[in-house]
Length: 299
Length: 125
Image (cartoon, rainbow over all chains, first blue to last red; front, side):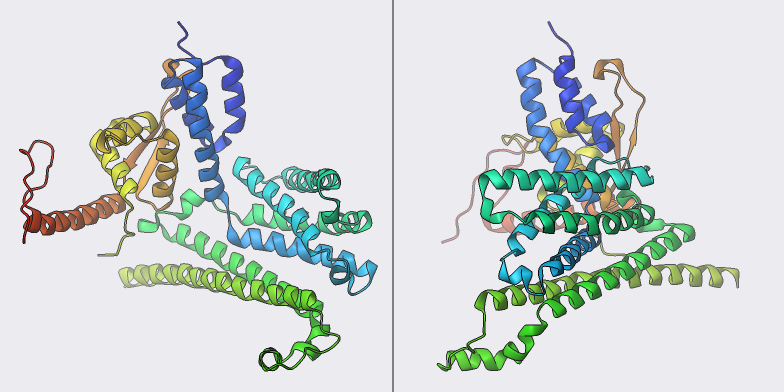
């Protein structure tokens, strides 16, 4: 009778489990081993939860938004080669969104599976290459499945060329400023050094996000600037439309909807930005309080 | 006293299991204990891991890896321990639960808690 799972099955399960929890999860599954089918079923019921949990632990909304903004700005800048209104005229927003989704999913999974202590340039470079290569591959499958959602080859190539250095630098910056989520939690009795470290980290994160948000806002503003004369103030346009006044002849509803969506995204990001800024302020306040406590203790 | 986050029902079960198991609390034993508490519902190991990670991120529990053992294919166990914050959160949850039990028993009479005799609800007309 078998007492341990077959090596091949265990090797596959091992590859699927993120390294941070691989050791104990594999051990627990091995301890519960009764038969091959039970082991496979147990692994199938456990591994998705473990991956999801690791993704949650390593996911950082600020990093995610920074990467999404960088990608969007990169592709929007690349599209200028086709003329200022290329994205609107060729309905290229959805294809760009699909490429961005592939890259962001790869980054999220890479973060979950990465060794947190590996802060090398090679890792950052590999992440970016892998994500962009898979984005290219996704374009190949899109060509077969849904050619309408395909990004023009020149735009894809130019976007990748622009995004390669930007994403590399961004990931390097994130790697060097990232703290272990387990270390951030449990702030019940942190030392002054730890509080300082957290404050510095929260402060730099808040700055990154503030600049990213500003860049995103500027990008949205400039990509919708030709609409401002038509749709500003928006409320008059809508009231007039409800009152039976026709929309201006040059008014493009799709263009306007996309601009509105961009504006709403910027607004939604502001709420995230506000909470990140508040957290940074709290981290600084904790450090100041601890310094005050120590000063009072001395005197 | 600083406020602690309120706990979900499953989080309460996992914290109670860790408390009950003492220094034998690791993935498999915690899952078995939680399943014992929540009978007849079955509990998956994956759900227990997710909750353990979340509780650790909140600072309610801490963990460490043991030495590898041969019966686990030479792999370590991750042991869990309740932290002060976790104990306080569990106490707060239990106090709330006790208040609820008292309020319900006032209307329905004694609840069917294991070890007690058959439950006879008192209906108020």
